[in-house]
Image 1: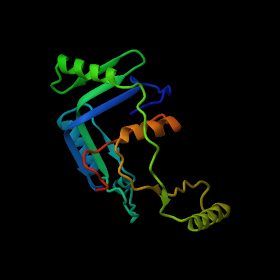
Image 2: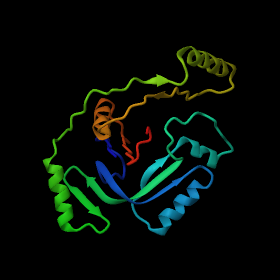
Image 3: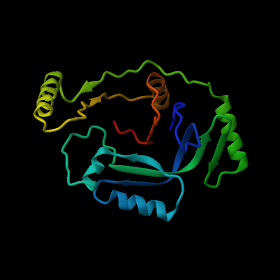
Image 4: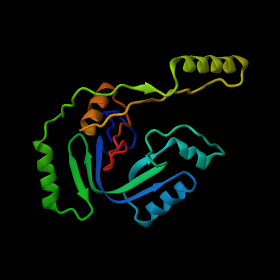
Length: 196
């Protein structure tokens, strides 16, 4: 996770890296938040993961039948074996059962890497699930709803996707993050290839 130098109240790190899952939790919407609470309460500490859009179905009386091209679970969290916290002046390396010697080896490995890894050109050609004509028609319909006073604000999005096997997802993340730095940038890499 990278804050991209945004000043955030309460922030204690510029970047945080969590690696090597000691324990994981994956759950579909239904009782996912309860499972996450129990997962945390069982062993309080750092957890990393994601909450998907479809968890709205757990908190509201909603449902959606949109295609799922990625197949991520609605909720996925893990306890990291290693945790690296970077501030403006320090790098803190900690972890479950991590010895001082192991922390020094990780630090030496990090220092041996190039400051900014290079990424090959992105081999992605994005596609939209909703084609241009259908998108424009939906926008016109939403504008009409706004004109009639049915609503005053709409957040209408069109999914873009691309299928590709990336040799180095971290380098691609760094390149995209450099092009569009966001205050809550994050990369979640899974051991298994979801495109396989």
